[in-house]
Length: 476
Image (cartoon, rainbow, N blue to C red; front, top):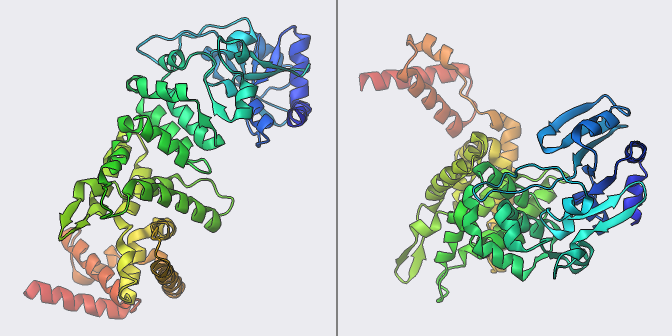
């Protein structure tokens, strides 16, 4: 309780608790903040619940601050900034759900117990009444159920009532179970997992945007793999990311090639480890993590058995196309879709480098093609090495150290990150007497290839070479 006492002792929380008590209303810290404080995890967002109705809540909060906004007034939520703390305060709820929608028919409740029992999991159905510091764990009263504190101690994810009722009411909770399994490192109770299998079809009433957001939250955890495994094992992933579960079809019992599904999960974990080393303290890189998870989804469609072995020719290109289609269906923004697909398309490019030293031209092209995703490509390519052959792994690591060194040297000498021809479009048109059109584009591409092959050659030499190229193409 020490962590909870520390939170409620802050000036903002103390002032709010005193104000609601003075107005004759119950007031409690609820849900995630209580859970995380009891687990010794950091607490950032403060969520409160109260017996006061929204208009009453606003009137009480206005005695403390003018920085108030109705983020979800129709759902009973008032947000405010009080003494430097951003808080959300929601009226007790007693919602009901229709079979054809996960959006509840909002109804305000009268008791904290009634509010808590409608929440997703017992570990989130905890409240600390303020200012009296009384812990409420209503799940212990559920028939045959365990309590939130008991489940915290057991590191177990369980619903306050029956999982069947919970997931029927709001199917998104099934994805939240996977997310909390990853985020907290908890086990999902067997009856909860069984209900996830049974009620998977209910995901059809959940919007793609909501599913996307839960996938992103899962990938943003320190170790998403337990959550991903749960989604695949329960069949939920099949409903919104079938390309991932399709990786299971590439397994065989004869050892002819590595387990692509397990390999993909290993690459995801290794990418996250490298992400932390190379960008300590940075926010989770969702583009990188998506690319790591999906980098081999082109393999099932390209698998061929040849001469006693197996091949996956062009699985990088096929995988990039599949990722674009799937991420668009999940309503990811165009920038994310493009960047993830680009990383998947390029993830094999490096592996020829260790066999044959690349020219400066090839290194320039590698960096240019990666563009703004070069650092992510470095991480993805390194993470893609999962061989148990130590000698091979060391050879690949040294080769990638070398290519990164060469890119850095070329970048310092040539500003490689912004490689452009010495002449722009206006200069090309003036030099060759051309109007805007395809010929200008072809001339620009010629100069860009020249720059990549030979490095900076100066405007005068570029102009001379361009004239020669133009005359030769025109006469030819």
